[in-house]
Length: 148
Image (cartoon, rainbow, N blue to C red; front, top):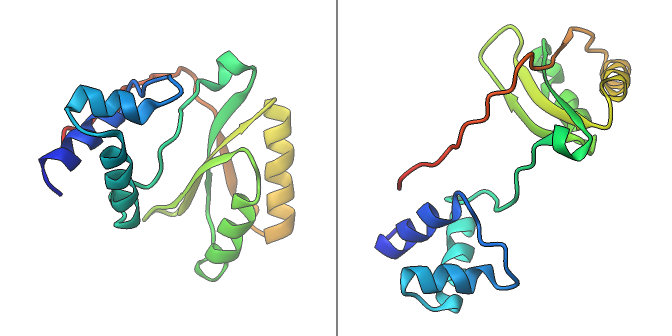
């Protein structure tokens, strides 16, 4: 990565331009050409530096609820369990942790009842019944901006 790559990464982390040509707006801010910004982002994505570019929404403001879930999954069922969880449209993250509750995922849906029904389905499909539903008592939103 060179200085231009770092500048692009720093710029796109927050306050992404809401315009028909956001990469042109970014290019102008950074003194680059639009095609150069796009091509650099393509390469950064191919190289695994950038996983995705997308919006983050506050579920409650859109009429949804969200929760953090944790499951205690036997080693031999981790792949099947994770694959099953990932089939649900409202799952936004799914990751493994070194803990007795070793699979953690976030769920967004229209109601907590819907999430609870999905968790029962997941338990039924996978045989994993030790799944915690951990809705936030209070939401703290931080801006995750990392200077590259």
